[in-house]
Image 1 (cartoon, one colour):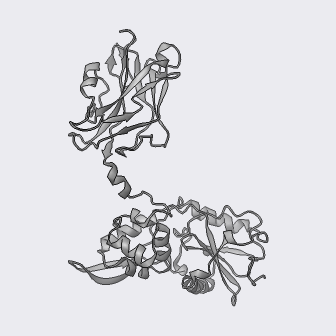
Image 2 (spheres, one colour; image 1 turned 30 degrees about the vertical axis):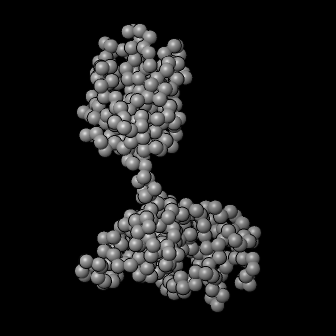
Image 3 (cartoon, rainbow, N blue to C red; image 1 turned 90 degrees about the horizontal axis):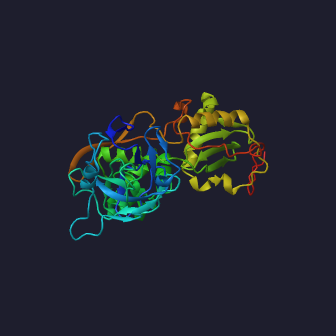
Length: 400
C-alpha cells in the first residue's frame, strides 16, 4: 500500500486532485469557476513524490466529473474505497433534470485537465448536509496496478439561481445598483424612494450624498431602525474607490482650489494655484478656512470640475505632497474605514417601532482630521509631472 499526502493508505500510488479552490457558494445554472475566476483544474498526482504525473499513458486519461454528497469525507478522512466513493455520487431528484451539466468528461493533457463548463441544475438544500462536492474518477482503469484514487473538491453550497439577481456584493462597487447594499431590497420601499424620488441609483450616488449631507441622505432613506441605517452605511463604506476620478472646486475670491475624489471626499487644497497641500500640513487657521470652503463646495457640487475634463498641460506635481497623500491612501487599502463614533442623532418613530435613535455619522470637520484620515481614499498617482504648476484649467479665468 502507498502512503498518500495525509498519511492514510490505499493500494495505489496515483490519485486525482482538484488543484483549484472552489468558491463556498455558487448558483444553479451558473458556470462553475475557481475562486480566482479561472477554469477549474484537476490533475493526476504521484503520491510518492507529490508531483503531477505529466508523462506516460496515465497522463492523458479520460476522467469523469460527478456530483458528490457534501458529507462525503466530512471528518477530514482522505481514505476511502472505490465503492465508498461511488455510493456518494448523487443523482438528480425525481422529475428533475440531470443534476450536473456541461463537461462531464475531461481528457487529461500532461496530467492536467480543465473543466471549462460545468453547472448544477438544482440547489443543495434537499440533502442533509445542504452541500455538494465535485468528484473526479477515471472512466476505465487500465489495470489493478494502475488503479487511481478518485478526487473530490471541498464542499460548497448551491443556491437557486433566482436568488443571484438579488445577491448583495461584498464589497460593493461604485457603479453597483444601490440595492446591492444591505438592508436595501431590490424594488423595495427604500430602493424605490432613493431611485425614483431622489435619483440615487448607485452606490456612488449614495456615498456622494452621505459625504456632502448625511442628514439629507437619512431623510431620503426614510424612517428606518438605527441598526438598518448603520448597516447600509457600514456596507457602503467598504466600497473600493478605484476609479481615480478627481474633482476640483475653485473659489475665485480666495484663489483657493479644493480637490475631491469621486465620492466628494476632500483630498487636498491649493491656495495659490501652484502648491498642492495635503490636509495634515494645514495650520489651524488654514483648516478653519478650508472647512468653510468645503461646506460651501458641498452646496455647489454642480460647480465641481472633473480633472479629466480639463486641460492639464500646465500642471506639474509637487512630489512631496503627492507622496504624502499616496502614503496615507495606501494605509487604507483603497477602502472606506469607519471614522470615529457616531455623534449626532435624529429621533423618529418607525412603523411599529417606537423611539429609535438613528445616529448620523457625518463627515468630520477638517480641523479634527488625523494624519491617517480614513476618508482620504483613491489615488493621485495617475498625475504625471505635467499636473501641478500654475493651476490653469481650460475655460476658466483663474490663471495665477
